[in-house]
Length: 450
Ligand SMILES: *Cc1c(COP(=O)(O)O)cnc(C)c1O
Image 1 (tube, rainbow, N blue to C red):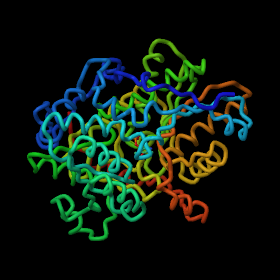
Image 2 (cartoon, rainbow, N blue to C red; image 1 turned 30 degrees about the horizontal axis):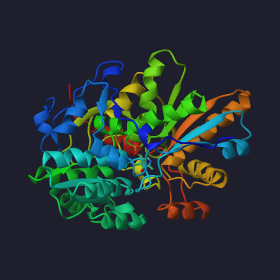
Image 3 (cartoon, helix red, strand yellow; image 1 turned 45 degrees about the horizontal axis):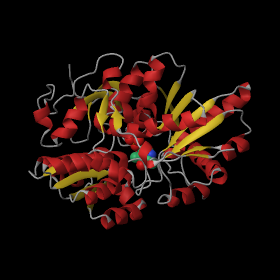
């Protein structure tokens, strides 16, 4: 009975998969927040280095991973895949459950997979400093460690509620050399204008993005980095699914359903996109994105043009959105509290290629605890949404007496999130109702594009 399916370092993929040439339907343009016209690559140069802008719009299906990036990837990749024998036994399911484990990275999540190439392309373009935002701190710690490798300075605006809830992620960022500010901060116009109206504002990813974008746009030597949502981020994450495909070949299996949790869409894209061309070629395979019921972007949002941030400084994309000024409740899966979604994942949902499902947080913690007591790994609260999805699929297979092969992405470990588990065991976690009124109010502020 094999539990771990491992690849050697020389099996580390040499290319990322870019789904753009294989997308169903036509891609919508990205819109400039000031002019409301399509952006040109030059418009994006104050924010991103050319190497990443080119990847954002590339029509090449395969893009070489630079050797400098592969060398850093090898510190923890290829990541292991596991067959969840212990969990299967506990569920009494005929389903086979495989999971890819991204918690082996130094930051404990999948995010360094894109942080490292982003720092690399900035370095070769002459960037001195990266400004970015972070919710729960996984992205901030990932970009901080990546900047270290390439000798870049790093400034991170951290959503204030998480700055309080997750002090150790702040410590990790500082250890890896970053400057960290709770957002909204008094360092930017965007932050100051929010604090003026609401001094106790607990922050949101949208606000923190505004601060980081403003910092980058107003400093010549500084660029911005985003940990999710964008096309090039999703592409960097395909290393997860590309490795998973090789590992399943070794196991002699192929998935019926692939599951990932969904915040901005990057780890879901990472595990799912490399399988989508198989689906287009006739493979019977389902792709399932799991999101929190308190921030139900894909299941309750609208597919429309919206700003990427609260202060309307970031580009406008067509995506599923709850509205750029939607303030999600302070749930413990901080990495899933974003009002929008990857335009690529959004289009795939809109075209019916990808399914989405929303789940309340206590049901996710229940799944995470069962997982930790069977497979032993303590999952990140974000990842527990994918586990909930996998367990529900396995229980359905049991009910129907059907065999089924399930693959999910365990996007990170929860070692820095133990306060969330304490709150769960103390019955202090609430399941927030889908905040219909707040979403309707926020949706009335969408930009008028096209
Ligand atoms: C950030 C994060 C997520 C959500 O981000 P995506 O871009 O949707 O992947 C999920 N899991 C973990 C562990 C994270 O750190």
